[in-house]
Image (cartoon, rainbow over all chains, first blue to last red):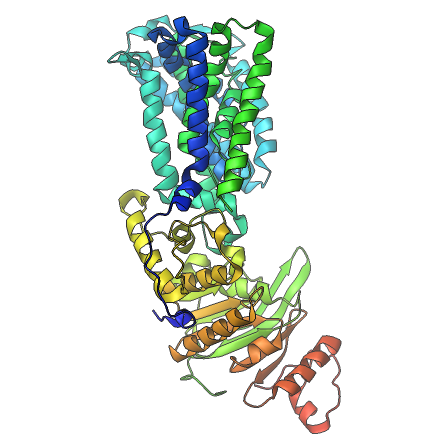
Length: 337
Length: 277
């Protein structure tokens, strides 16, 4: 190709590797949130050493945090592409309806897990349809489908709950909520999902497309990026993650109840934003979401363990969330022109 | 200069119509771009320039009319097809993603991938680094392929958009208001660059609403007014002063007849007549 733009400035300065500045540009806010996470943890250890120096609390975190952290990972990608999904708590339960149906008819738990994930994918596909084909903003669509999926769950199971005791002997139980060298499998799945999400978001064309769509939809259109397909795929992945989390949660407590997903909406969203993903799209961080989820997961337990009166919990919780997102706002403005 | 090229038409539009929500944006537009030609497309805001360009680049589908590439009709043109046929457009900043790095901007929409769609990041960084040194004239050590577009000046952004188009070996380069927001020095650089396109034997469509930017580089100037072709003027036969006068008249009446202008200097009526070729 020709080199016609080079004529005015002749001198080619030696290009240094990465300057400190560009390092700061890329990592400032993620280093910030990691430091905040460590500080918070130190406070917990100092104020409640009996709890936070005991392995039992870590086992507990490793079991309970992945339920919403898994969804927070795929949600990070959805938010990077400029969308949002509020329907996942209902998909956690709807997926379980598929699980129950297959498990009760075939007795095969592994097949039931796949059925649940399949139902989650279909639910995500429906979200994607309304958002990309009907052209309705994701916020509005997923408020609607949140009720729709929840309602569908209630109707399909007549509002009942189901005991899943017999599933404890299955391979799936061991794979999903068992232990791997002492580590709860929920955590193992979360780490795998985090690696997968990172690869998809930063090392795969889907992630590149998602970033462009979230940053500048007009550019995405002009450059021929498959906008509908990409956005729909991310909703489908979120549906699958939600259904998977619903299965893990239900297997862990050996019981399915239609409200299984309730209470996970805000922790999952908070994890994403505390992690430093931009609410405006075009920029997200998988590491931040991972750290953010464990911050969110630990705050309540930490406050209780510090023997602070119960009615302070939400106040402190809210303050920590606001401090975390303020760290991002300040660091991103300072280092990233 | 007006009779450049070998008679082939890399792109020809015949009787293109396009409406958006009942509003006619393009009406019976026919246009022929010869190879090795720089075509200036002039028109006021809302004349339909951008829509015409987006039809050529496959972003929009026309409601009626045919598009020919090298004399062959192409149906169902989309962005990928247009690219495969050698069309590249420089949409200035509108087609850059600010928060993304330079290499991600260069390769957006068509990354170099390994099997299963994984990105060949190292290769794309390497190529970006090369392009920055050779073609964009980015010599500052502070700029790396990982730099985000947010940190770039207007001229640097324009350079990025142009280099992106050039890198993919286009035969037809479309520049959409490339001088917008550029300093004088940067504009000179751009004009020089457009002349380079012609020297390389490629064709280009240079869109602007300012005739002074277009006149010095274009072989031919087509004036678009309210969705219609109002005239077609080889720059060899019309002086800048004449064209400026014509533009004024087109803006007032919506059309222009060159022969009549030559003969009588009288203003023409708005009867939608075509210009001389």
